[in-house]
Length: 82
Image 1: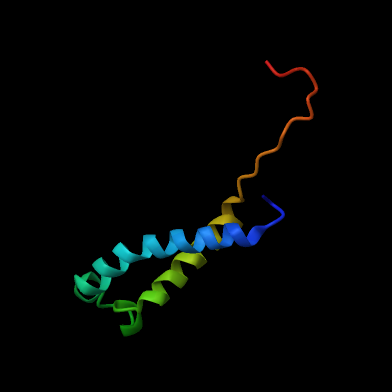
Image 2: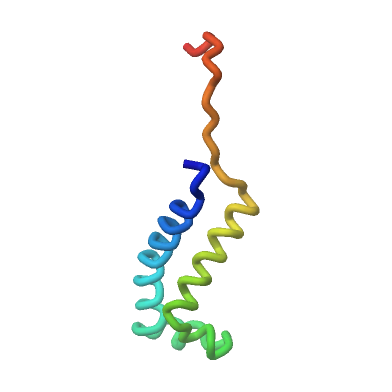
């Protein structure tokens, strides 16, 4: 599966879109950004939906850079597997 990273990118994009929906709704439609974060610039108080998706993707990339990516390694069948 490592040979085709595009599939993983698409799955990651879809997950980020679905995670962004409730965050964007609560932040903009319910007014959390305007009511409780008035010290932020106007563009961050009520961002567009695709801007929120982009922020989630950037956070995922930063998380991968800072904490590293989980990779599984298969044993070569040495015989000491207990």
